[in-house]
Amino acid sequence: MKIKLIFVILLLLLSSFLFAQQGELSLHFFGSASLPQGDFGKDITSSTTVSRSFGFDIGDKIGLAQTGFGAGAELMAPVWFDGLQWIISSRVLINGVNGEDVQSKFRSQFVADTVIYKYEGRVVDGVDIELGNWINIPVMTGFRYDHHFSHKYTLYGIVQAGMNIAKPPSRKATVGLVPLDENKEAITSEKETVVAEDTHFKFARDFGFEAGLGFVFNQKYNLGFRYLFLSTPRFDGNRTLDVKTFPEIFKLENEIVGEERSVSMFVVTFGIQLFQ
Image (tube, rainbow, N blue to C red; front, side, top):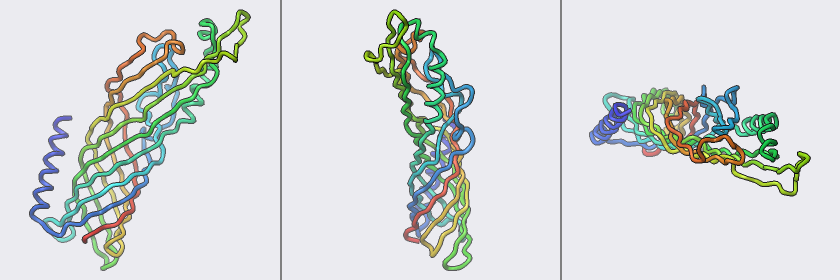
C-alpha cells in the first residue's frame, strides 16, 4: 500500500511540474452515471445469512451496488507532442445498494429460525434493513490523447492511475420482538422494536486505474465512456448488536478489521470543457 501511495504522489508531483512548464490549461466539468461491474454489483448469495452469534452477514466480497451518479473535474495541459495532454482529475461517485433482496432473505431466515426466540419467550415480528450508499472518491492523474477529425469533432483516449478513497454503505437492522404468554401465544400489544444491528465503516484508501474513450463536440461538449477498476480495499468499522435479538453473541460491540470489497464500474460522463 505504501509503495502505491508513493507512486501516486510522484505522479501528482510530476504532473504539477509539467503544468508549470506548459500553458493552455483547459478544465473539464462533468456529471456521470456509474454501472457497477463484477463483485461490486453482485447481489445476495447463499453466504448471505443471519448468524445467532455475529448478526447479519451480507456475504464475502458482495457489493450490492446499483447504478449510481457522480460529478467531477479534470485539469488538462498539452505536453510533449500535438494531441497529448496530461490530466489531473477528481470526482465523487455515489452508488445506492439493493436492500430489498437483503431484507427479504433476512426476514425469511428469521421466520424459519423460531426455536431460539420462542425459547427466550418472544418471537420476531418484522425486520427492516436500512442500507446507506457506496461512496468512492478517485483522485487520478494520467494522459489523454486527442485525434481531431475536424474543428468540430474530436475523438480521445484516456488512461489514468491514482488513489481511490472509498466507504461501504452503513447498515441498520430494526427488529420487532413480541413476547409470548404461558400458552406460547404472541402478546402483540406489548411488541418491542429494537435496533438489532448498527454497522458503520470508515473510509479506506487503495490504488485504482481508469481507461476509456470519448468524444468532444465543438471543442466544448464532452461525452465519455470509461472503465474504473478501484482494486479491493480493506475496510475497518464497528458493528453493534442487540442481545435480545442475538442472545448467543459474544460481545455487543464488535470491531470490523480488513473486510474486503472489490470496487469496479463502467462510467458514462457528460460535461463541458472550458478554456480550450
